[in-house]
Length: 479
Ligand code: 4AD
Ligand code: MG
Image (tube, rainbow, N blue to C red; front, side, top):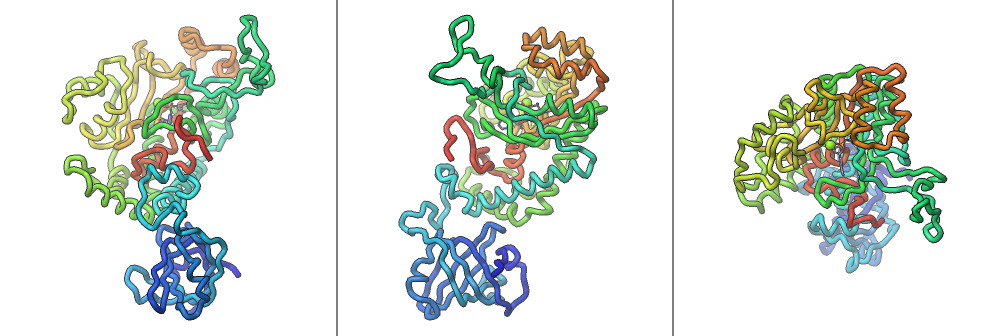
């Protein structure tokens, strides 16, 4: 028989009809005559109540219905008399697909810590919190494709294995086919990594941008959406070794057009979540409000999750230059310690404490910083006339810091080439990139949105490990 998802049954008013529902048991409450089973199949954050009259079922069936077991229920959809739900299913038949030893099942019917759940990544999608996060993650991926498709962008598939270092930062995972026992040696007698990939040096991509630029120089508007890899050993709540990135690249866009697109895009995604994921958002909002109660007054966040999302949609992002931001930071006294851990002066890269100060304390809204010093930004950014800054932009969000990084690109062959020389970047691996500046070059811009940072913001979760099904961090690469 055809099963109906719990999500549909909870909205149904077809009382008196027979239904089939399948899922995992969250809890069971049993009195003398009747058992109440909370069942979920992951389609929605709320569970469906199954009512089973004890005398209608063999004892061992009810005994085996424990938290974590998987069952199939046939029964009648009825209007519920109980509090907290509108519908329930009066069971007429129950089949057990898989039992779960109540003593050993790691997910007990109580709230577990997120740290503990990280250790059981194979079961945590069954919790309501992770179910909500994963459904929102799906909705955001879909909305991203919809946004670009509706605006004439083409989805460009860029390579995962590549010979180039798109950010020039050297944070790459090597890809090798070399025999570890008997590797080929170079003239110095050490391993010849130049032969990595059947004779070429290769790594996992840090960004699809450079290939995205090639796409924009032919299709005008493109975007990538794929996994990217950074071999940085940064153990923070905002960094992963494997994360997903969305990188639109637009011919004929200047920095201003780029900022306008980034702001419109982010607002669209937040609004999409409010329109399509409100049950999950409200569940997470309530969960976080409960947790806030355990915090000291001054550490509590001034807005709830849904309120925070609405605020982003309704307010313009603050736009200012890096130089203006540094002025503000140098004059400011962060309330807590009276100074920043990392001192600021013109030319230093901003740390997340500075970004968050600007967003959370000073402007109290999302901020776009532009025109950063050239020495702290990547080689491909368009150089400003002053010779000191480049047309970079970073979008900074509350609770997150940098959510987007982007720029107008240097389209002038000579300027790009001399910057590559200056930075001693291996130019042979970029010959194809340089050729786009030789043949029909054009002004163009683009940016990268970190998908997990977006999901962090939308879900209000605190740690990036909790918004991706299988986090890859220096500590965690199991599963
Ligand atoms: O600022 P990034 O390094 O920029 C680029 O990769 C450019 N090629 C983008 C472009 O212009 N097409 O990274 C872009 C975004 C960051 O703003 C951040 O949201 C995210 O990617 N990001 C990470 N997210 C999780 N873990 C990490 N280790 C990340 N590194 C960057
Ligand atoms: Mg960046």
